[in-house]
Length: 119
Image 1 (cartoon, one colour):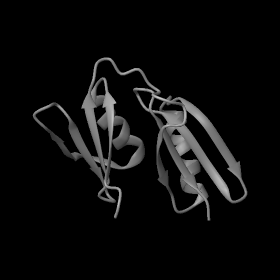
Image 2: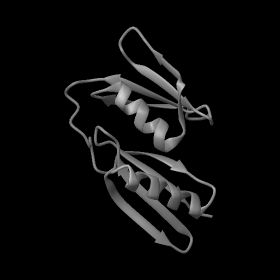
Image 3: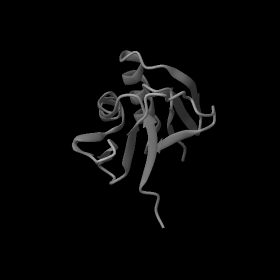
């Protein structure tokens, strides 16, 4: 059994699609909008984000709650970190140690997103 999607409440689905496309490889061309306003967007690994509009989002929902992306090498994580910094994204946590390189950032609604590498 594989995890295939995660659902997040968002204030502005278009803004969230743009954020996840710019930094995490989601393809805006795959975005579909459903009758309830939920936008589903897919990345190259066939993982979906279901972004449901909710004007009252108060995030982070809990400081530990996050979505994580494992990368194949430490330099790839460092490149994402540099990209996020250049874009002005809020970096919440970061580590760069032998055997573990990671970051957590906040998406436009304050949800935490982790990018990490470990052998």
